[in-house]
Length: 193
Ligand code: UP5
Ligand code: MG
Image 1: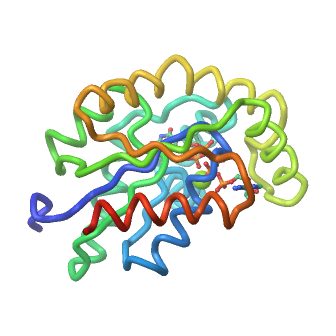
Image 2: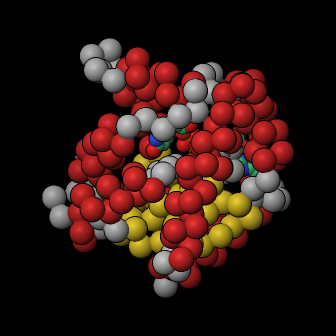
């Protein structure tokens, strides 16, 4: 499977910054395949014969980063399920520098990184609101605080590293869903030419 010929855009930003919401709309407008690392981990966790179920459950509730071999394996398999597609949005990954290097060494380089910049208080409000109906084990105040800590300690350095490579496209998450998506769409339209 020729990963090197694929065009991969990482979608990063803090918990609740709008990665999933905007990725779903980019799929409609630009024909990306959207792979959320978190969604893939939650699906794997639910699979009755998964050897990783308990481990994933623990890491997600604690806001910790699942060992990258697991996540990269899921992402590779999901990419191979779409041999016809040459554009992938990889959402919520890589979350630390080790994961970033492992993916770029063994799968492929990212073309660009979409970064949703969002203040913590906005993310907190959105996640607590979503938590009323999401059923996600990590949409509660304690888990959200832990997710923020992991984001600041481990994921921000990934964004800084990609910024040094000139790969970051920043979108402010302030404004309505439609406003934020309009800014996102414009950045991606320019990227794809
Ligand atoms: N919303 C969105 N945009 C809005 C706007 N402009 N105005 C008002 N409301 C807006 O959005 C969050 C909520 O805000 C929604 O209710 C939405 O309607 C509203 P969403 O688009 O879902 O934001 P997103 O950034 O996708 O938030 P998510 O909670 O998915 O981010 P996380 O990064 O926390 O979650 P993820 O699923 O990526 O990861 C979960 C866990 O999995 C991690 O904490 C970690 O434990 C584990 N994980 C790994 O270990 N490794 C990985 O590589 C990936 C994940
Ligand atoms: Mg998400």
